[in-house]
Image 1 (cartoon, rainbow, N blue to C red):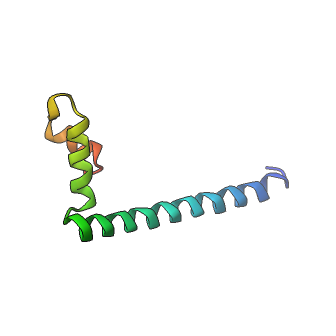
Image 2: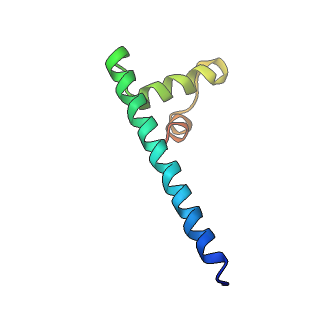
Image 3: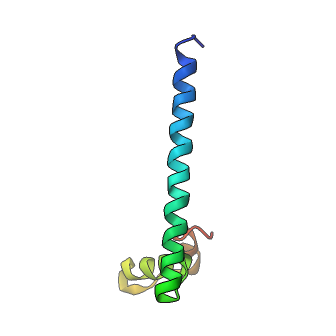
Length: 71
């Protein structure tokens, strides 16, 4: 590893940390808004969206779990 690679790695890590922080913030805000306005949790919303996009509006439970991050 050269001296020039060290600052870039730190910069890349800082950028990645910022992206993850923003993602967490957006998900929290979305979950709160969905629950407050519609009484639907984020996982429920994702399940409904997955089923809406699925052919014939149906899919296997394991596929649904995988799509919404529960599998």
